Amino acid sequence: MKKVLTIAGSDSSGGAGIQADLKTFCAHKVYGMSIITAVTAQNTLGVSHIETLSSLSVRKQIEAVAEDIDIDAVKIGMLSNAEIILTVAELIKRYKFKNIVLDPVMISTTGFDLLEKDAKEALIQELLPLADVITPNLHEASAILDGLEIKSKDDMEKSVHAFRKLTSSAVLIKGGHLVDDAADLLAYEDKFRWYDAPKINTNNTHGTGCTLSSAIASNLALGLSVEQAVFDAKEYITGAIRNSLDIGSGNGPTNHLYRLIR
Ligand SMILES: Nc1ncnc2c1ncn2[C@@H]1O[C@H](COP(=O)(O)OP(=O)(O)O)[C@@H](O)[C@H]1O
Ligand SMILES: Cc1ncc(COP(=O)(O)O)c(N)n1
Image (cartoon, rainbow, N blue to C red; front, top):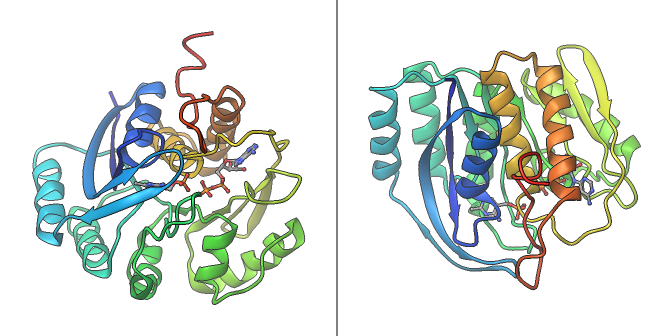
């Protein structure tokens, strides 16, 4: 069985973070492992507390897994601070991790900071170059590109050129926050590809970015090309949102069981 590692924060309500990642891995029939960077007290309405683990704890967790188990792909989500970013970057290089999908998590759907403001530069300088695929949403893409306005599909196409100057990783700009569309744009090597999807009318979008990036990492571990891995992941997330769950009174979670239980 293929083995996939997530390095991310815990979401007590189970919709995003480590919990969304492990559910996604399970649905893709890959073996999931987890490195926890922070413990959030969170529900469908918001984040009320964050306790970030020490970079030593993150280092020890990664070493424990990597010294013993071969890893076929890695998904990276919430990293909280610069020290953890530097630790993760160092260990990616030491263990030569492959199939790295970086979701540059900065703020939650509910508007809470999940990355310290001064850590953005470390993310861009140290981690971006190590990722095979990065998956910013519109807000994260704009933050990485120094405030470039990205509000439309045209803006997304323009931003891809700016990304090209920053990294040779494949970049999937997620359009979940477009007004009347949910199209994502993949730029890889010298090619572009749009992944179109209708915007589903629901508030249950908690954890959509986590789910998409974990699905891409699972598909890469299973041997798919980047283009196909994103295609299959986009189908998965669209189904998981279409069948999303009315749990809690805010932004409910995606449904990872929709292909198993109908
Ligand atoms: N209402 C929606 N209908 C259909 N797809 C959506 C919707 N909201 C988000 N998505 C899709 O979910 C994935 C995650 O995107 P997005 O919500 O932009 O990321 P994030 O969770 O990081 O903010 C993307 O593939 C996006 O197009
Ligand atoms: C631990 C953790 N990681 C990531 C997210 C982002 O997910 P979303 O953008 O759907 O709120 C989150 N809310 N919590």
